[in-house]
Length: 271
Ligand code: DGL
Image (cartoon, rainbow, N blue to C red):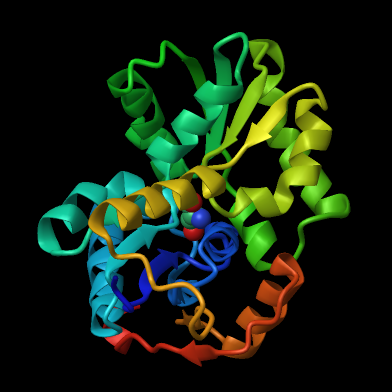
């Protein structure tokens, strides 16, 4: 048994989609979330920048005493999963492998689309992971600049979201996919708009549930699960941006109250 919290991070609000799955599956676990809102979007940034950001965030989470780190961000997973595993002595998991496994479970044709940020698409992490897991999937990956900004701007439905998403996803039309992996944790918050454009016969999958199951497997294997039946799991949120805005949008997206939202400030030189 281990009472310490699980650390979760993303460039902003997107990782809350993963936190929600964790909170549902593991209600007794304490969760500490950091949304690096001051430095989003991560997608257009370099691998080196995201490695630095990820190490800085890991330090904040480790100072909170976390027993495990979940990189609830595909871009940071692509850039820094291996590095964080080398540099920290707690288990670190990313969201890409769970996303690939989720797609493999539901595809019937094996033709799977992946939408994500520029760095995720450029890294080819989905293709490498699908190959490593010997899935046999035929992947078509598309970078979707602008989608994250829609979510962080609270603009997930309506004419602007419709125009940006529609224009980008038109490129997937000829690929005859039956599953689309939302390879950015912000994108489940755009799911209805995405579905409207990609076609209702295409199944959307996100990595959130699979990631939560993987966390549970690790806790079971290590014996680090919190004892059930005590005080319920605490949820603590840090944002490097504006806490009031983070709370407002987070509550709107998640549908539950974010009681404990705290600011975390980077030294100006790090921004
Ligand atoms: N939610 C993140 C991801 O999964 C980051 C998006 C961004 O900040 O560009 O890639």
